Length: 125
Length: 110
Image (tube, rainbow over all chains, first blue to last red; front, side):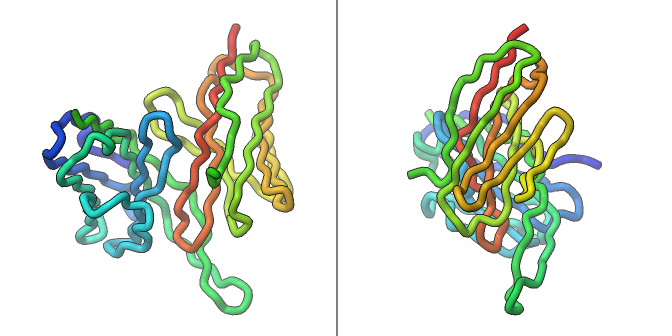
């Protein structure tokens, strides 16, 4: 089974330019996540898709970041215009989806293992 | 205050040593807990999930204390190949998003 793939592996762009990162999740995984690691900091969540729908984009830094997952397969993350502080490693992860009924009838979500891609190292100069 | 706190290390230990990593988390509503391993310039990979009753996988033992909001990882009989960064990770909310600690670096020396 092919793992999560990301393209490109490295990107060096100038401040003000646009960059689009791509993620291909494991086939059949409905959940797709974007994370980012800025140098010296912990890996941070950006957003979560279930199929083509954005479930949670609370981690997106600002409106210069746009993520899409048309058709519920691969996803793109566009940064426009890029700033120096956008430099870092952008990871994509995917997982199966599992919903369980919690006490009181509410729906809950059990976290399945998330498989990470190799990341895209973005450098903005 | 960070949501997940870890001692960054580095921990330098000889082969065969036993080493323990600790982690605390701030959100009492956290539902799932993990240890991930990350090698230099590689992606994080799941090492093991952490259950309330504690769990063991070979040389690795993980413990969770929900009352203290504390997670631990014990590595026995360290190997050179165990050298890596160990990430304490929790998941909360209804989306499964992962919240990472900064990682603890382990260097096992011959």
